[in-house]
Length: 331
Ligand SMILES: Nc1ncnc2c1ncn2[C@@H]1O[C@H](COP(=O)(O)OP(=O)(O)OP(=O)(O)O)[C@@H](O)[C@H]1O
Ligand code: SF4
Ligand SMILES: [Mg+2]
Image (cartoon, rainbow, N blue to C red; front, side, top):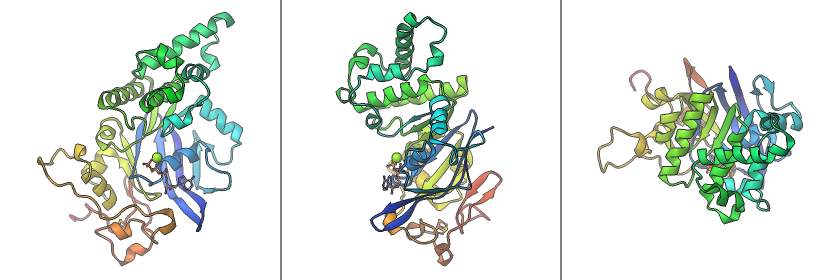
C-alpha cells in the first residue's frame, strides 16, 4: 500500500526578483514498511518537501501537484485541522535543526510528557497517568541513547547540546508510534557512536514494527545500509529515483553518478589516496536558475537539447530525467 504519493509537486516562492519554482515537478512515493531516502546537495529542496508535506509553509506560496496523498487522501485539499490530525496520529516529523523546533520556555521533560498521546494512557486511572507518562518517555529516551534521563528532563533546550535536542525530538516523534517517520537529517552533527545507534534504532523499528521512514541525509553509506529506495533531488527537481541497488550499480543521471562518486564511504572500489571526482560549480540560487535542465551549466554531458527541460522517463521502476542518460547502450 502506498502511504505517501507525490506526483509533480511544484512550490513557487515569491522572492525579491519575482516568483521562482523552488520545487519543480518533484515526485516521491513511499510504501508501507519501506525506508526511502531523499538525497541531494544543500539547497536542493529536501527540507522544503518535508515542510510542504506537513503544511508548514507560508500561505502565500503557490503549491500545485498532480497528486499529493496520504493513504489515498488528498493532502492539498484537506483542511488544516484534518492534516494536523494525520500528523498527530499517523505521521511524525523530526525537522532539521531540531533545537529550533523545541519550545525554549518549557523543560525537555514537559515537552516530552506532552508528546505522549492520550490513547496510551487510557488503561490506567487518572492518578497513575503522570507516572505512566514518565515511564514511557524514559523508555524512549533510553532508546535514543540518553542514559541520564533525569538531567535531560530537567533541562531547557538551550542548556543541552544540539545532538541531545535531536535525540529528544526523535524520542518525541517515536513516542506516538507513527506509521511514517519523516526524519530530516536526524543525525546531523552527531558523533559516530550516536549516529550508528540512531540508525540502528530506526532500522530495528522498521524491521520489528513495520515503521515506514522517509530518511533525509547526506551520508550515502548509511543510507545504502538502511534504505531500499532513493530519490535524488537537484535544485528543486527530481533527477532520478528507484531501488538503491540499481542507482548504485547503474546510475542513469549524471548528477546521481557525480553524487555517488563524491562520497568516499560509498566507493568500495576506491584505491587509497585517490582523488574524488566532483562536478565543477555550485548549485544555482533560486534567482539564477538555468533554463531547461537545471544541471546544464555543470553537466559534463550537456548538449543543445538540454535547454529543454527533460521529461521524467523510466526503465521498469527506475525513473530518471535526462536527455542523454548514462549506462544506456553501452555508454
Ligand atoms: N522561507 C524561505 N524563503 C525563501 N527561500 C527559501 C525558504 N526556505 C527555503 N528556501 C529556498 O528553497 C531552496 C531549498 O531549500 P531547502 O532548505 O529545502 O534545502 P535542503 O535540500 O534541505 O538543504 P540542506 O541539505 O542544506 O538542508 C533553497 O534555495 C532555499 O534558499
Ligand atoms: S539533460 Fe542534459 S544537462 Fe541535464 S543531466 Fe542530462 S545531459 Fe546533463
Ligand atoms: Mg534541509
